[in-house]
Length: 380
Image (cartoon, helix red, strand yellow):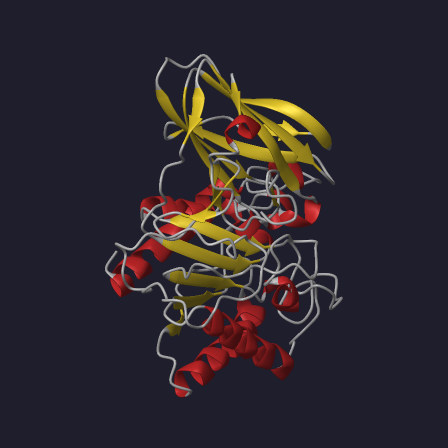
């Protein structure tokens, strides 16, 4: 058996797939040097530069600098890809906070998710495989506010860990709330607890990314808004936590070392839902500022703003008006690469999941519309 630690001496702990190794790209450093060559947001042939640490390539944001041989991750859908020659692969994971759910994909075939309780344990990711080379993906389904995960080590049965495969040629970043987390999307309207039926794998952005041959990095948390959250409080709204590497950890920010071709923003539902009323010009101004922040990190990305699918009627018209005004302001300032895509209809009652959140069928409908838009605008 070969473990991560046995190959650590010969494996770069922090490297960029397809790029020269750079120890400054650790996942939670400062913003990128403005002199670094940007990724062309309209060039689908240029692969995103993923972080390779502890023998695997990471998906989404990961902290590789606090403890380099035990990287930690938290955002929905974040995880890693490993390649090995052998018959089995087991991960040692450390979980803080609530129990967390993970989706495993073996040689491109999705498996049933597994749950890791709080604490440290050994979890078989693949077993009983034929001898040879295999690829395993691990995607976190539980959202960041529920706690963080740390990869303590990997053990290969009857073989050894190999260099991980390179990333896809396309990257989509999504900024959102519970809808983008997949909160309760595998559940039913009668359910009273939704985190146990949360599946990022079945969200509109994950479905769309797979259809487009892209990877996705989701920065989302349930109940969060632009200026106020579902409960009416203003703490840790999405603009305030957007730059974090680990959801619950302030002060350790992502380094934005790779520019996605597309950024999708799906925010605003919690600013007006639950009877709070119109959030007013403060919403519009903060949304415009968020767009400016994103553009500062990603000079070439195509930014798509949506608001779907929980709002309807007057609430939908109010928030749509504010988002359109924010997009219009960016367009007027010379940024033509931002749009308000308002073609996703409000969901119907047959597509309710836990606490009225969109079920998988609704997420598939949203994905189809988003795929069509991105194909039309980017030629994908």
